[in-house]
Amino acid sequence: MSIDLVPYPPGQEIATIDNADLAHGGNVEGVVVKAPGGEMSRIWPDGTLPGMPGDEQPPVASFTCTPPVPGRNMTVTFDGSGSYPGSAFPIVRYDWVTDATSRPDAGPVVTGKTPNKAGSYTVTLTVTDSGEVSGSSSVTYAIT
Image (cartoon, rainbow, N blue to C red; front, side, top):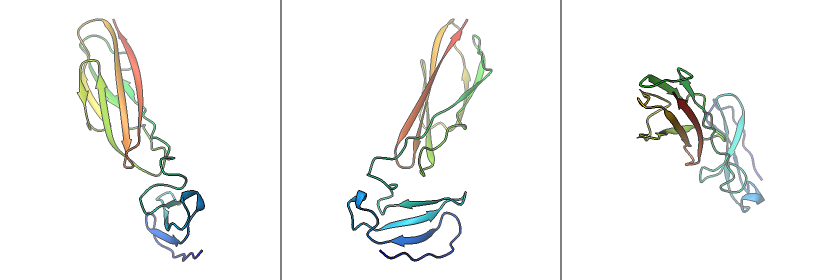
């Protein structure tokens, strides 16, 4: 195994590894990168993280609603910016679905109107990372 370490800035390749890991099939080259926070991650040539392909953790979808208890025919804002990646892949897509609408790739914050009818309404946020792994979260609101 050969490792060449060089002081590159965050996000840059800092080492190349030959015969990286038997768990990845052996005789595979990998790249070590330094993330903006200073931590190091090894990334395979195909862009996956260490471990067996498909072992990446899904991103975590999380959102808030303003106002927190919406009423009939109110303007509400859903904010999914508290979602976070599960692996080294950043979140690149925010898909919002309610009982009445679908907003694919709408971004982390969406605004809309609640129905003018009492009932239970579900909002679902699905976040997808650049490795095409998704995570979802749903909340049901009772509108009186």
